[in-house]
Length: 154
Length: 239
Image (cartoon, rainbow over all chains, first blue to last red; front, side):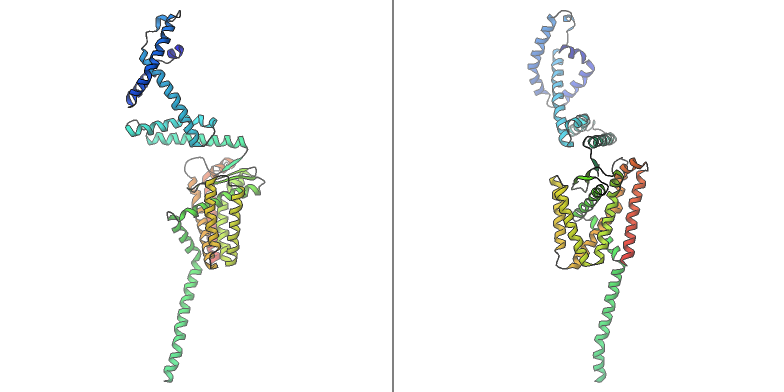
């Protein structure tokens, strides 16, 4: 746990806070995060007692809690989006996992586009992602053809 | 009195002969340009929002079944045929010649269009027999190669429409509708290859380009030229 916290550097914390502040659901997330704060506090005390590492742990506990909370959210959102990607593409999990990240790009842009338009991807970017997806689909189609020994003709 | 009598007897003859001539000239005009008139009607129907949908499905069906028939003829088998409401389709095959299967999607649609029109043009009874054959082909496709509900629904709609056409009270209507179907399929097969020119490396043209190292545009040109040649051939035959 501590190793994870040390690996995640400050660069990754900054956009995390930005995102929490931007969304309107920040308050309930913070309320839910209060329990985690206590837990992380206990863990920090335990690690302080361990030799060799106690002197360096003057980190912001709230930041750690928010970081954990964000990581959990991203994990659950990633799963949800992966499931959505599977349903949308009608493909098996192995294939959909490759496209999960691409579909996240689309869903993020569509969610944010309701509230803010300044960070909406440009048409050029959208077409670039679509083109990339089509290439990926061709590759997947080739995989399916090789896997099942069938040919698809549109 | 006599002259008036003779006049009375002559007048109806003159008028009837004039109307007969008029009818004959109308008939000869229709006969001469009937293929182009059917093609014009097909072009209009293609632009109608709802009416064009079943014809689009029919054209897609002929495209996909042509892939399948090419697979069967080249030693392969059809695994599944899928049709989508937007006019897209997919034929899954196993084995056979990839070149023939890829090529005969569009080429087969051209042949189907030409065959339907020319057979319907020959005789009303031939049109009836051929439409019954198409009903059987649709039924066979539904039984053997359709695995999803959407395709089943689309083919059911086509089947019902064809059965209604076969059951028309007068054979001349059936003949006209079959000619119209042939013209629409042919017209679609003339224009649909151009959809392949989209900058993406997908579709039958891309598959053929991969197989033969000849550019996709060449295959699009071959298909469109074939459809045009078929149209000109039918126009010449029908005059």
